[in-house]
Length: 188
Length: 359
Image (tube, rainbow over all chains, first blue to last red; front, side, top):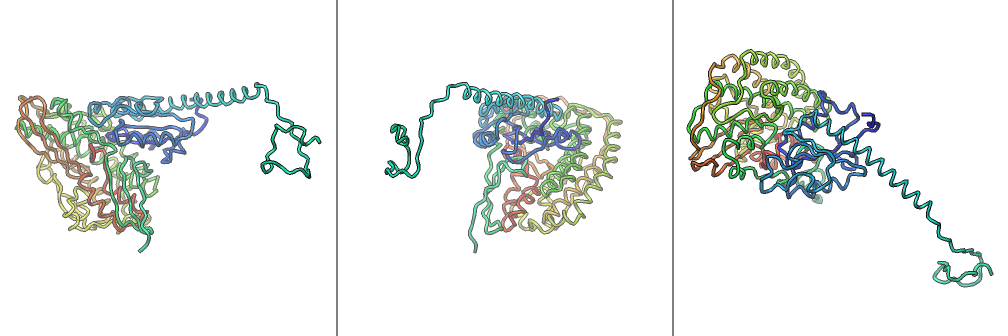
């Protein structure tokens, strides 16, 4: 739990669930389970969210909605699939309109099985997701440092010497853009 | 006449726990037309009767909706039992009635919380859901599940509840009655709540009849269509009177649900004293080979279960019509002419259950 140093905000979207998992997600926010003590708030705006809770499986209609919400969330982000329907399709797996679990559309980090998933399990899943979030953040940081390092290590290209003497009477070519191929222009 | 603008509402929207999409055509701040489009949660579970044998289908039908899950299971069982021509033991009917009424209490408390969240009264939301957890604890104690508990089967119920435990349930309900009374007094008397509800979303009695509204939406407009009057389960033996209000606005619909909360508590108390001893299930033989329609009064209104069998292990056709589906025309009617800021209120007061609607 030591990695919970920030307040992760969650966004919840109901794929094609039966409501059972949705009301359990909401129950996590209410006084009995109260995830707000960890700083977790349910937000309606994907751009505010760190953790994406999806309940229910994917069908033709909601592919674009799930993708849009996922793409709008800022990096790093974690997707938690809640309930057996979000994991694999569950009891509706054989329905004609069901494509399968959430991982058929977006990458999923944590799976919380159960029908309906209990609030304790959902909280466990989100906490596990926060670990993934911390890892992803560290990886992003390392990557950024690596990029900086490679930039620093690489031999800097020799900048063309370009000294411009203002007030030169010579007419400029191309409206002021100095061409490096005409050295000595300013040295004169 | 001002310029018309179309505002999309949903499918992902902060006040909606479930996705529904409305295209709101507005003129200035007034909604002139609302065009609903659904299908975000459609699973097509009626077709699963071809793949699941009819006794197993109970598990699928219970997952039509996680809020009124028990009622759906009961409705399906009732339909198949009618098809098979069997009579369920009275104790099982009493137990079903008790679980169904507990489900109604949990559903209405959940709805009160969502409504409070809709008009921004966060602490009321929290209190409603805190009281609701007591009901979920009763479910867990008696069936093992919190929201979906496959306890209903064709021919009866799977688990018995001892009379001592029933007394304990009644005591627990008496314990939360005072808290619930305090909570609902805020909904009915607080001026800031009344400002949002009174006179908003009028649906006259005639409109409710014409648009075939069901459940608390119709009863809030004074139309009595409570299926519990028809006499199924243990209701004929209980002292049951449908609750009617004639305001027709959001406040009346809220009041119907609040009065039903206490009525359900009374019904459970009465059922716990009248419940007979005996079997909880009878053996079922044969396969359904006819047509039967079972009707149920869900927390949101009348639900309709049709089953058709051909003597094999698989039903030929299964059809569920759920209350929110029937209430969408009424919703579209009340949305016409309302303020844009009242749209969440109106959508919430039909108690939308989209996963029921689309199945």
